[in-house]
Image (cartoon, rainbow, N blue to C red; front, side, top):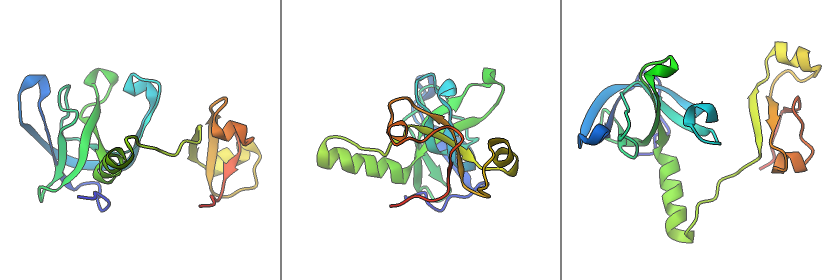
Length: 168
């Protein structure tokens, strides 16, 4: 499935093999879409973005398993969870099916997958942030970080800039 029409509250099941227990199925709901898991929670150097969040338990060994909706349509591939010791319970994440299919198609066709990379971190511009940064913009995405040497840095984008439109 594409997974484009997922909504919070929709039923979901996570299939995997946690601790070697093959074909384990857990149930829950879609908790959110378009989520970001920061690098400090992934244990790596990069954040995971545009994820489907679920409260269906995902444990070590479940990564790579399917996240399916109540119709049995695969809507994502389980990729991560936040362990209970981090102060939360039942925070699981899956890569949306549309992303998985896009990457698979690229790998089959070209032998590599290419993703856009700007080298910035963004947050929604709030009225408080606009006032704090002294910008007249009323809406947009506030640049909070710029990766040194990245494409945005080379283009002259700086923390505090506000993105209000993007050319395609």
